[in-house]
Image (cartoon, rainbow, N blue to C red; front, side):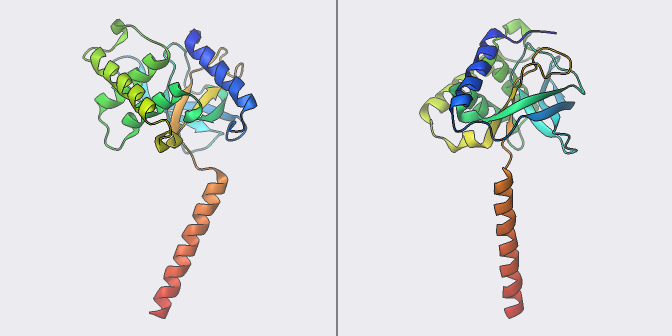
Length: 213
């Protein structure tokens, strides 16, 4: 079992400490994550999407791994605290990079480069680790673009689209600490109720208009 890289571990600890004093906090109680399957592979390591069952849901959630040096197995379970990507500059940069891979129609090359860029953002790897045919300069450019975007757009609405799953220590069924993950934000129950109410209102209006016509 590989140990979590020190820089990523310190970031997780710092964020958790900040949350204990911050009204932003997590969106809810910790969720239970189960790794079900993985969608892509980059001439070796698996890359985004990693598919998870969250709290036993039958619909899987696609997430991107942010830790290169940790290890998880299929069927493995642990708890994670969900926080907004805007909780730190580094996670905002990760959100920008992830948005490139999650964009509709993103090529396999873009997905792989985004995955490796996020790994390098948190746990720098060496050029020898890169799969054959992947350019370190392309990954460096993506990292530079992410840093520039976050610097120039501190209040961008983009960050609200993504949230980070921080593992709760000592909850991994295989022991150790699993990777940190990032994924698209999910609507809170209150938002879903408002959305449903709005859709019902629109449907009622259209039905009434049709009868009048």
